[in-house]
Image: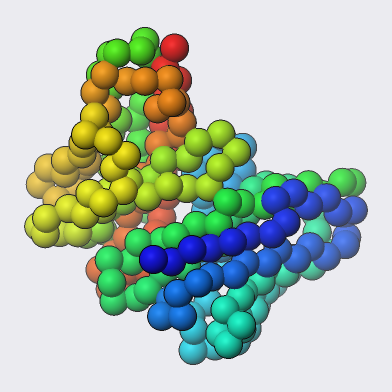
Length: 113
Length: 114
């Protein structure tokens, strides 16, 4: 079955700097890769996703890149702000199946003002 | 519109008692998932419902865990004879058949077994 590894487990950056979180997956058939942000005491919220037919997707300060050959994908946050502080989860799934997401273990991002 | 809702938001119980956790998915969403999140850990898949199909129970950790979904909408996760290791946040998510990959999560139920 699919296995998703996520690094780093914790990341601390200064406000205004960039943050990068990386994930690898094991099942080459996986073709959908969402990223979720989870704030303290709340459920995960989808912030961006990418499908395997594209290599990069951007939404304002957030971008995701996908390398299918290497089976890894990354989340890039530019111009970080204190409100970006949260736990970020990557996930992978195979569309057309039940859509069950396999999650990484999360990255706790701290943005220091 | 309204998102996924879960109740209760917090539950404290004694070891050996049964608990029921409720999930109200987004209206019109045909698929519903339950996940468990232990302290500082990722999300562990528990069970999946899609329409009227038989649920995928492959993630349930033991036969003390069960779930049902009535009328294709509300779901209840039941944990019988709770153990301390059951303490976790239980998250529910739903999605639409047409965009089946994108899952929308509720706020979770924080369960503490004393």
